Length: 187
Image (cartoon, rainbow, N blue to C red; front, side, top):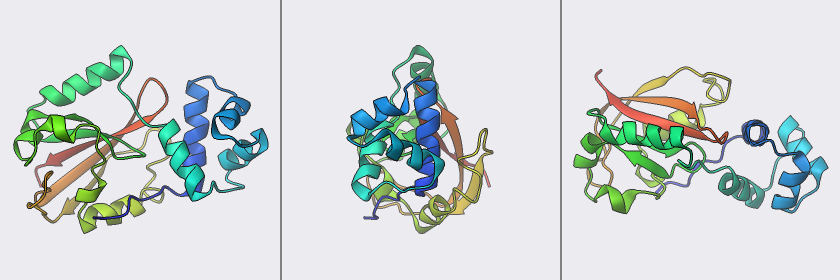
């Protein structure tokens, strides 16, 4: 099992600023939720200070993606009904939010048992390497392009990864949180 990656603190601060803006929350409100000062939140957002590991985990929980609105629920339904092998995860926690039938057929557990769990433990070395490069690949910029790469397989797990080409697309939900659409694509 792999340790779940932590985004660069600058990227986490940038994500916090966007998340807070969409939710129309002031820095003071986030500071109260996090048990820190407004100045601390400001310094995180500007990249002048890094949250501690505990604060990073709490920020992840605070900003975790949820399919709550009608539009977000529809996105989840589109993924579930897709004929392509794909799934949707929270971009911060890697928790599974939606799974296509084609992707579920390859799994060793029913989708209902995987739903809500972090998928990071199933990552191949290629997935780990690309996760570590997201900042330099422009993933956290407005309107990032899709990222495609080849991955080896790891078929002997609950959520198998098959050798082939993988595509990641970053989407923003209505509450300001981000999700990752992960799709197996033809090479």
